[in-house]
Amino acid sequence: MRLLHIIAGGRHGGAEMFFQDLARGLSKTGVDQHAITRSYPARLKHLTNSDCVYTECRMGGPLDLLSRRKVQRAAIDFEPDIALAWMNRAAGYAPVGPWRTVGRLGGYYDLKYYRACEHLICNTPDLVKHCVDHGWPQERVDYIPNFSPRVEVKPVDRASFDTPDVAPLLLVLARLEEVKGIDVALNALIGCPKAYLWIAGDGALEAKLRALAENLGVAQRVRFLGWRDDREAVLKTADICLVPSRYEPFGNVVVNAWVAGTPVIAASSQGPGFLIQHVAAEPDRRFAQRKVF
Image (cartoon, rainbow, N blue to C red; front, side):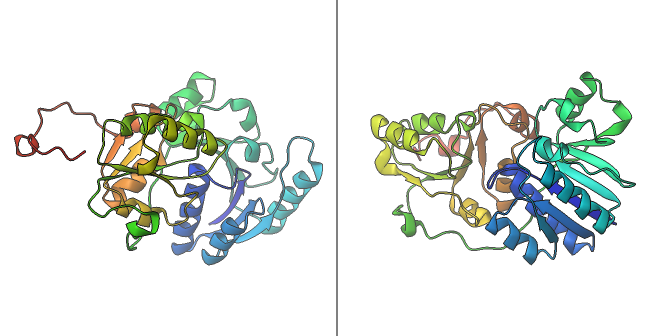
C-alpha cells in the first residue's frame, strides 16, 4: 500500500505526536509512505528516522495557492492508494486524483472542511456519532482508536529538575493552553503538600501559570520542563500522570501513560471519560493510615 499523509498542524501537539507514532509503526510493516508537512526540524528528523520521505510545504491558508499546487504535484508524483488528511487545514489541501481521500478527525470539527474526502476516520465512537449526526453517511465513517508505542527507556533523573527521589511526583504532559486545565493541577497541589508537579509542555500560558504557582504558594514544588521529545522517559519517572483537561476529544497521554505503566488521574472530559472506567470503591484499609501526599 502507498499512503500519502498531509498534516498541517502545529509544531507540537497530541495529534502531531500520534502522526509520528503512526508513521513509525507503518514503516515497520513495510507501508510505502510520503508525508507532506510543514518544515519543523524535529518532525522532519523523525520522518527521516522512520524511513518516510517527505515534502515540505507551508500550507498557510485558503489563499495559499502555491502550497495547493505543491501538494497536488507531490500526490501525482507519488501515486498513493490513499491520501490521508490530518485534521481541518490539511483536509482543505486534500489533492484530487484516482486515490481514495480520507480525513482524520481528532475533535468535534465542522465537517465543511472535509468536503473533498470520501471517508472519515475518528478515534472515538462519540466522534463517529458527531459525524453521522451532522449528515455524514454512516457507511463512510469508521472508528479506529489511537495507540501508543512501547519504548524501552530509562526514567529521567529527578535530580536534573531538583526533585527529591522520595517525593511523590505528579506529571502533566500537555500544551500550556486553557483547555488543558493545568491551573486545576496547580490548585490541587495545595492539598498535596509533599508532592512535586512536573509540567511538560510549552505554550502561551507559561508566564500566567508560573505566576499562578507563585500566588498559590506551590512554586517551589513545580517544575516547568518545556516541550519534551522523551515522552516515555518522563512518564516512567512520574508516580501519577494527571490529565486535568477541560476539553479532550481523545487524550493520547492516557494511552501513553498506560503503556509506560504510570497510573492516571483524569478529569471526566470527553476522551478520558470514554477511555477510563470510573469505579467508586471503599479505600484500601492497608493504606488508610498512610498519608502519601
